[in-house]
Image (cartoon, rainbow over all chains, first blue to last red; front, side, top):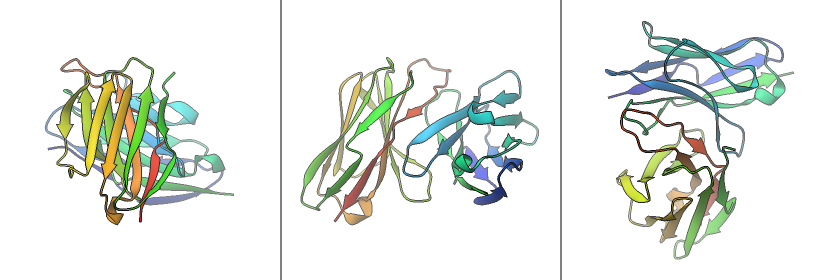
Length: 113
Length: 116
């Protein structure tokens, strides 16, 4: 069985500060990893994904994530956040046979002025 | 274009009503999904259609009835719902198909359902 743990349910930061949202996963097989963002009253938008290759993945809106197989982590980072980054962020994994996403519980990022 | 559209945006219904949610994509995707999302929780998978056939039903009560009339369209028919069914209903699509290859799911904006 696979699982995803997002280590922080809420992350408050000030505008222009760096941020890291932590995600650990558990799986007995290789997995593919995703970060989605959900703005208030909206659907989920894909931020970035790791399928294979380079372990540093760049996504939209200046976000990046690093896949670390030995630590089974896929942390999301942004060097300088904006007020508009305030949203719920979900880490998710999928099995190689695809398409059954397993989501973490989510991290609410709140960017304060 | 990675757009999935859903209608209506909001829906209020009584427990005896029958209503339908609609989802559409024009990306040529062959897999489509329905999720239910309660406040402050991740989406929960309900149904998966692959090549217009129901491939996964996550033990969803029969008051929810999915339908895939063609490869671009996915409906969710609702009947005799309960207040606890109030939630955001999300549709997603992905390319679908090949074993050993994962898909990226693209989500619609959702329908906010309230059952009175």
